[in-house]
Length: 113
Image 1 (cartoon, one colour):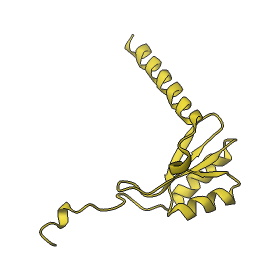
Image 2 (cartoon, one colour):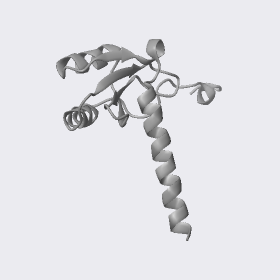
Image 3 (tube, rainbow, N blue to C red):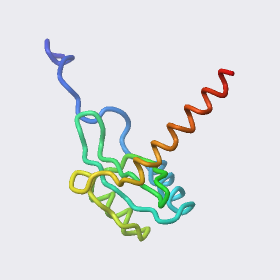
Image 4 (cartoon, rainbow, N blue to C red):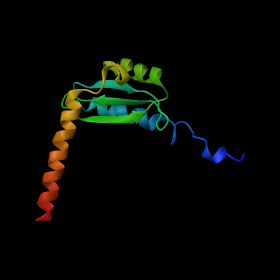
């Protein structure tokens, strides 16, 4: 081990994508309608991920082995697939997050009484 090896950044921390990820994505997409896939690029912190967003904005995210795997998954399951870097996140996802935040805040206030 070199003197500065411990300070070097490692790309893609965590575990790699596996069958549990694809199983979760498949089951999630089958239980909802109006699902679209969004490919999130690899960063210094995370591997490539695919984000599934349902018609109401509910979403889930899991690792995939690369952008090609994400597009292949979407094609296999008949889902439209987009790149987040080009299109951004859908407004319905942001609206869903805002609704969930309001519900959580209400729940907290009710618990404090």
